[in-house]
Length: 196
Image 1 (cartoon, rainbow, N blue to C red):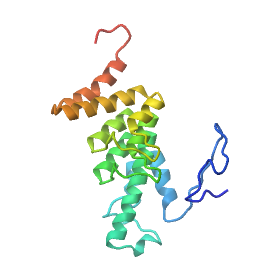
Image 2 (cartoon, helix red, strand yellow; image 1 turned 30 degrees about the vertical axis):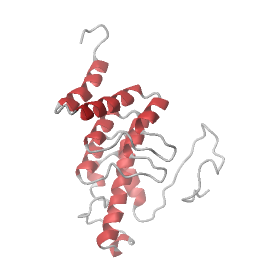
Image 3 (spheres, rainbow, N blue to C red; image 1 turned 90 degrees about the vertical axis):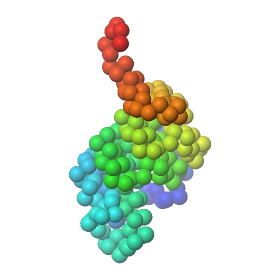
Image 4 (cartoon, rainbow, N blue to C red; image 1 turned 180 degrees about the vertical axis):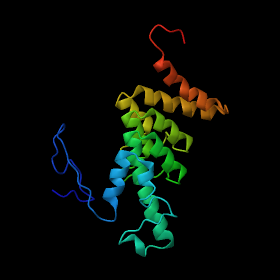
């Protein structure tokens, strides 16, 4: 069936553990954007209307000017950032952030790209999002923060990384955040029995 904007999966009686296949409407170039985001290919994303200076146009967007155009491109950049953060495509996340994607934007249920990166355990993307101003204190519609989601889903490394980077930033130690952020992953890669 068609999942309308205000409908929920619960409304459609989706059974836990069931498989859902989604088909994005071929409206306004969203299918191409979602597929490029799922792939995590920055070169494809760059051609799909995610920046204000983009030459990409759809039948709908060619009529946009000024604030409308800015809103349209920023929505597209956010959707791409959200998907690439969820999938753990570090290069694509970095590209999007460097080209103005807002890591503080929220989905209709209040989730940020940091929420989904934390939920999926995408540690590299978490560090990148935090470096670009993402907040571990943003709450979604259920009152969950990225750290509480990581804790609930047993993503210990994600939880530790967010807490450590936040703590180092709050303490004011300059240059230590990168060092501190890399330490846990280096420890995780050390062979058993090493004294690192």
